[in-house]
Image (cartoon, rainbow, N blue to C red; front, top):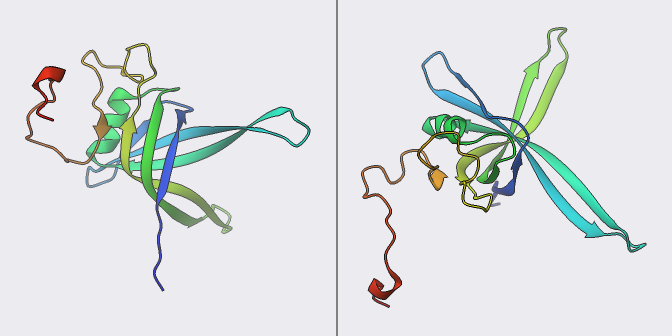
Length: 148
């Protein structure tokens, strides 16, 4: 039987990204997201529900998230579910489900600041591991120059 493990999330960070490094030097980032959902209950009142999700990001993408994102920044995450299991200090078995991000895309907050960038040079559109390296930088093309 075929299987599928794919997650798409859009929400806001609940804290600044935290990055640490493995003994071999690979960056590992932890993101915490809040995803809000509004709905109308049967009695007609507006309700809001919040889902909190932990996300793990690896490699250069983790460092880019640390450099350009901060608490409250809107992000779109594409990834997969990952179950972590370990033994606690008293021998009890523990586990947690989180999202292993394959891609983190920075979304704009509107108003031109660019999605929580902390650096002085504007944030990249997405933090992909090496995708697009060596390509020409994006530039604005006047609408009259578009060939279709």
